[in-house]
Picture 1: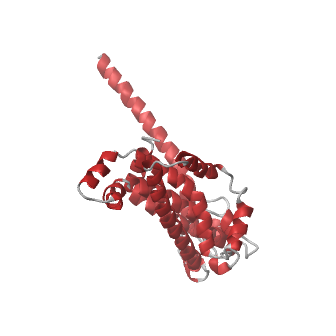
Picture 2: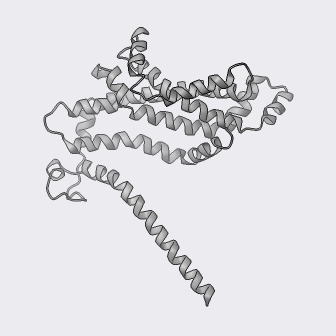
Picture 3: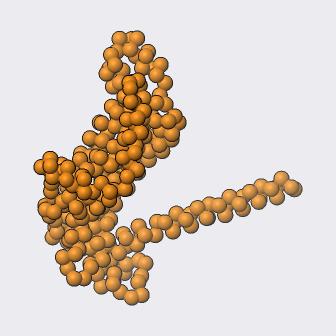
Length: 283
């Protein structure tokens, strides 16, 4: 009797917990739902009052206008180039740097690691002017290459320390066994360390990609040429050309900007959780 009552209470508690979780999920997902629904509404219905949740007539005219009547695809290509280039550069430097901090012993190693981490603690607005002067001095102003270097300076410290924790948590005996079998230092690195560090690389790459994909302030300051603009600044400039904000067009642009990130999360979710979990084992 008591065991049955206890099981009933547990079932009720579990049901209430699940309802609460789903309520929070739906509450947090509502802005995304509203974004998609508004993008599919005709303009007259999107501005109608009272607002309706579901469109009476679904239309894709806003997506068609965005893709064929505006330079949205050029902005998309620029963002893709910047995000992929930044991710590749950050991952290359961070992986070798993390391996150096975790495996080699040389004077100033800890101080160097702490100085790199310290740069991540500085507010972005503090380094805006110095970075701008450096980019101008390198002759990379108003270019995607300059923007890649700027984003690398922000993403590299976090990526370096996350990968450092991941590499440091790996047993060094695996590398020593590979070297005993005849592999050199670089051979053991590419054959043993790199495959084992893949979850950490994927999670760090995703963080770097999202940072480069969504960044607005530095893209606004460093890029003035419309042909070189990325999505955040390009879409903003596109909508500011008119007196009235076309909300349906803005929501259509937001949907297309969000889709690549959602797809990355969907395909890399398993590696993402494994990478962040493993990176916190040993500091």
